[in-house]
Length: 366
Image 1 (cartoon, rainbow, N blue to C red):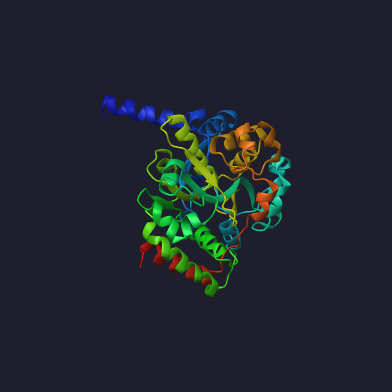
Image 2 (cartoon, helix red, strand yellow):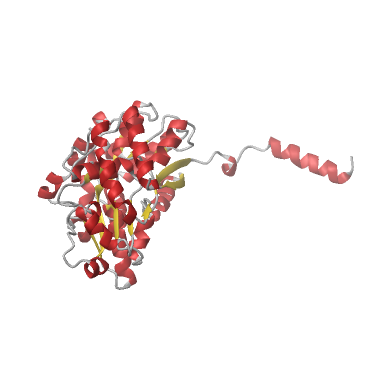
C-alpha cells in the first residue's frame, strides 16, 4: 500500500470512529401535496424557521390525480388536501389515519358553521381539518361579455348551459373545470334535477345539457383559467371562487383594462370544502400533526385566505382577515346566498363509472 492509499484508509477509519454530528442527524421533514396556487409560500418558510421541519411541497390540479396516487398506496406524502366528496370515499377505502387531537390544540379555533358541514364527509371530523371552502361559479370578463351581449344573464347558469347565450362567447374563449363531480351536478341543478342524485338515469340527463354547449368550450382545465382571465385571453370560465378572485386581483394589479367578476349563479351553486388529511402510510406523522396545528393558527390561516381569496374554516382567523376578503360576499356569502348553495356526496363505484364515461364522452365531443 502506498502512502496516499494508507492515508486515505486511515482517514476513512477515523471518520467511521467519530461520533455523528448534527449534520449527520436525520432531518425532520413533512411532505405536503396540495392544489396549485393554493398557499402563500411565506407560510411554508415561516413554518420551517419556527419548527425546524423542512417542507417538501408538491402540487396537483385535480382530485382525480390525488385519488389515483392515494389508492395506489406509497404516495410518500404526509399531508394531502382532497375535496370533501373525495375525502369521504377515501376514508372508506382506508387511505387516511385518524388525527391525534391531543397534538392539535388549535382545533379550538375551528368554525362550527363549517365543521358541521364537513362532518357530512368526515363524521366527527376525525380524519381531517378544513383548509379552505368556497363555491363553484362563473368568472367573466365584463368588457368582453357586455360587448357581445349587453343584456347577458351574468348571474345565471344560462351563461354556460343555454347554447343561445354561450355561443355568443365562443369566439373570445370559454374555459370549464375538468371536474365531472362538479360540472355534472351543476348541469343537473340547472335543469331542476337533484344535483346530488345517485341515480344513473338522472345523471345521464346531464349529458345532453353539456353536449349542447360543448362546441363553445375552448378548454377543460383546473388552473389555466386564472391567468387566462387575468390577461384577457378568455371571456368566461366556470371555476372556483378564490381562483377567479385571484384572476380579478391580478388584472387589477396589471392595470391592463380587464375587469373580472365572479358570481355564484342564482339557481344555486356547489359549496365545496378542501380538507387536510394524513395518509395512512405517512412516514412523518408527528411532523404532519405539527404542520396541521400550525396551519390552524389564526394568523397563519388568515394569511392563507388573504393570499388565495378563499374563505376558511377557522373562526378565530376572521379578525385577521383583510376587509376585501371578509367583507366580500363572493368569498363569505350572505345568509341568503348560503341558502341557495348545495353540497354533494361521493358516488358509489358503479355510479362513478357512469360519471367517468359520461364526462369522457362530453370532453371528446363525441
